[in-house]
Length: 362
Ligand code: KG4
Ligand code: ZN
Image (cartoon, rainbow, N blue to C red; front, top):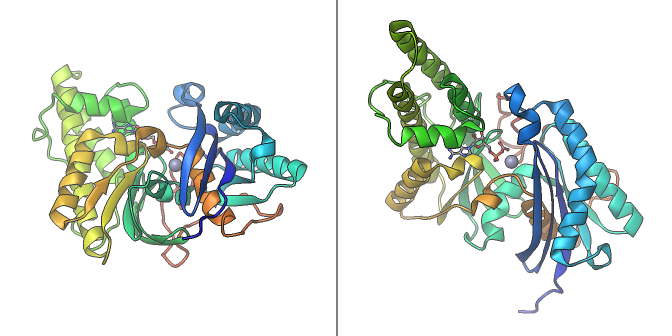
């Protein structure tokens, strides 16, 4: 087969609380990551218990060009070597998305480069292609602080949403439970650590939406159930012991695991010809969740893959790669495309209801 000339693509990401730039180079659907620089904002938002959109937007605007410089430097290239620019054009917190889009458009205009506006969710969803670990079609479970959905990925621009959260994302629930237990943020790793020594059977917490057919999920009621369980213990004892904390954490995590496993089973059953289950997003770091998904995949006779953590969480390499797939087909968006706070990947699927703290869930 004739191989195309490799393209070098600069990617920018600024849709939530990570400012990122990356350079990838590749052809024919394959790419190498030459650099991937991520500047997280956790320290800026930590005191507020969630991402503050205005603070995020300002930080993105101040840092995005520095990220681009670092990504180019780490890749050992200059803008002279870049064949195209890819930038997250949504969905996300609009001030941040705009900061990235304006920087990317400035570079494209100044250098006469083609530019593509990438859907952030497509970036996550295509990551198993970037790592070379899944053939189309595959099933992607995207679970983070801002996203929660099942996508069947049939091609680089062919996504079908099989279901998703009707309220919160699971990462939000982990963060909230950490706050309820007096643990640090981000809450996911802290709750997972506490859960390791806890008794998952001590508190009977709900498994939301398991009684409803399909693959939609809900985490809001589970959060409230944890609040009630904690308050009941506090009312009885006047405080929480370490054991109370670890037992609540373990009971909560077990509920999340049960719900994700069962809904994934259903999503796989509804996805003919899918050979791989892939997971991405910050919550995919959770060992108990990964182990449960591995079992679900084994039972269904499909492969299981989770990208390395640096590619699970928000990054610009996935954006550059999604852009590369379009640029190598000769597509580009010109300089007039908008920044979009909401941008569902699958326009045929019914709109999602949730719009959590970390931005719109498309
Ligand atoms: O993908 P991500 O870095 O950012 C966005 O939400 O876009 O995901 C962050 C989320 C946080 O809510 C964090 O608590 C959660 O992922 N998380 C975890 C774990 N590590 C991070 N949740 C459960 N278990 C973990 N080990
Ligand atoms: Zn993301």
